Length: 102
Length: 381
Image (tube, rainbow over all chains, first blue to last red; front, top):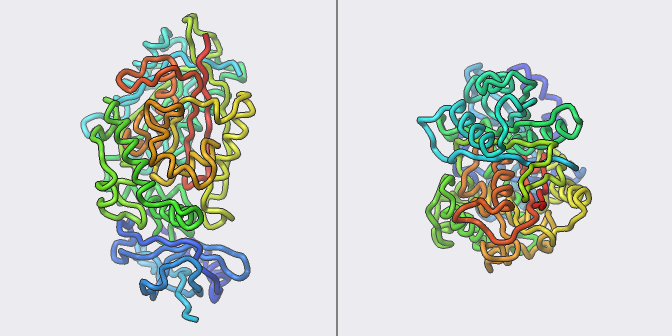
């Protein structure tokens, strides 16, 4: 799959607008069979999170422990490397969620 | 609506490495045309449902490709709507016939998927999702796993209830010589199969398959005493991405398309005798039963586990084996659902024939519910 460096660049404004949001997990799954570009991450967690500004996002959960895998778990959005770099050599960064202990 | 089904056929679905897409389509069209009593010169337009021929096979422009291949130099076009491509092609074909522009229309669905690595196919299928979902490394099993988790939380749906969908559909497929899988499975076997995206396991997931299906539709009433009419064809859409939806436990596109289809046909869910629904994952059939109004919300899983939708019951669901066991060659699926329903209503479905069905419904979904296509077929005499 082609990931255009221009598209990554164009996307930066959106990524910035999604950082530092806090919210809760509304669903989660642990992916054991990954698509291309994510083999080195598997198994990994994908969540749907709803933030206090009512925005919602599907993203990976990072820095998690088993106890965080529940609906209602508090999370905050952070900047992380997303997929393995393709042939273009650009390292794509994007939004991921991190559990918040409260 | 005055559109009639004149002929309908599918190839066998499965890992068909020695058969090309052109041969698959040729065989399905040949069988459908023979059944229709028409010949290729009578066909005035072709609609092809397909999702991945460009990305996987480097072949776009499928309308002209198959028009040439079939020796029918007529208006021809490809219709794409992810896993609902076949159903959408059918919808486009029905509208084309209703417009009065064409009397006899050929609708074809085809997908060739098993020549490639599964992870390659999985990545390309995510073209049907949203950018955020792709960036998160989500797969289609993962998106339906997110749906499943929300349904389990809200209604107490269990992994055993989901497994029961797989068991039923594998049993039905064991009666279908064209199915990808013809071996029955047990609940224990489903629950012990490897996890793909928790809580979904391998045997909760439909396979990657090759296959084609074709139907001939016409505005001319067949001369036979019994015939099948398309009494409703309806499409609705929703957000591409799951996270944009307020409720993960329903596909509102399917609710809207089916309620519109019931209204067009002048019937309700209770009138449906046989339904082919989009069970790309077991949870999808449970939600389909609720979205189509067959069971109240939160009840479908238990009812399926109790065998309420198996062969022999009043409403039989996925008698072909569904996507789960009959196979899921993406572009072919929506057309195959029409073929199966047509055969059931006419009483020509072979060992899997159910008795006395007069009204059938097909439910074809693209993406994680961004497109839903509903057709209602009725036996007339």
